[in-house]
Image (spheres, rainbow over the protein chains, first blue to last red):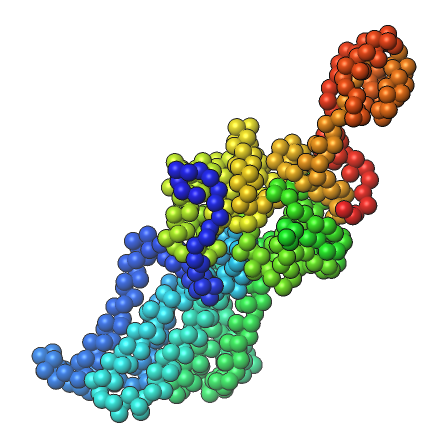
Length: 294
Length: 309
């Protein structure tokens, strides 16, 4: 079917592997997203943090530089689990802002324009569609969380020596797992909200509100009933609990939690699983080629 | 050779309410028309064949593949043009069609090339870099058509393809459908409530009513069968003339108002009728080859349906 021939011909060329087709969605989405200079600038800023943390690691191992800056090693933040936890929490926060900017329109635009039948009438399943939409966020947030986090870890290991790597392998695992927990929560929540709330501003507000409201609710429940249940309702305390569990720390962010408010790590993981299951259930209700009106 | 579509007791229920009921039959035509009044189940049948709705009973096969077990491989063989406005906003048309081609499995470069070709083919070549949101209704229909054919499917579902089109655009759309039909590379299933569109393009018709198959007809065969079907308007004693026609061995029917329908037998020619009319003192004022129009077939099907082919 060449342009000048104007006849219909079937396609006889090779096809892409089925497993890779979900990646078509983020590839096309990025063309759209990175047309905005504002967003591109913000995304570039997200890499300032890793740069600063890399400089801090470098300073720890460069006496000449410390002398030039008239600093002592003890003046610097120690390079330990807390150092990497702070890094991931800062980058995770930036990931949240990225999600607020990109997330609300991921599915809502397709729903608003009845685009879903066009995706789903092809050899492309609902699961691939959702994974494709989630991977728009997953790839971006990965690039500013666990990827630079592990690079920093390797940088520190390189400068400190092989022994440090072996002794602190848990930190690397924690960086990777915590980032993914955060990425999955953000991606699932944002695509779910995007599927149910068609108006962009409302969807962004809902994502913000979800964190604010669950936080307030969690604290109120904890205070009223002197329990830790509220800590797994609050998404931010839930993430802190999982983070502390993974890094082997205890109430590292000093959120003024009383002893009875600190939820067991297993309960946080359970809550994480429940949130994922709820989001997936809501997505299966909404992501359909056609809505059946009963 | 496997039929294009084979229906094997297919039933679909929404919330316990039957929408499609025990559909059976085989369709083999190059261009198949799906007719029926609103709510007959045409779109639901297409959606079920695409795997959007699960079958509650029976099954259907496309090119021998079962919709219950091979939905994904079936969708690799089909193209679908939905009835409603369906597109992705803030995209240029070529970008949109390319995305759809890639989702069908074409590599990126081939998808871009085919997107350009498909858009030129449907007549949107000059407008392909415009955003879909700025397109007129007719252009959106053509863009939907382009995305349905970009990956070169073996079967193309067109759901009300001429909806909202002005007469020139409608003719252009029907011409494209006929071209694809005649190319022999793809089968087409057109769902429409516009009898004329279907009549102009299709050779096989499935008429649906209340979720059942009300009638099936092979238009090609009907056309051949109707070649000897005459409608005669007379002045004079029509009854006597009709009886005289009967003596020639032709079947006839008086339809009132001096009109007679006659099925010509082999060996009988028009001049024989004129001779007969002269001998009976009857004037033949008008004589037409008459075929049962699709409208007649459709209306008959609406009056009575047994649900089977």
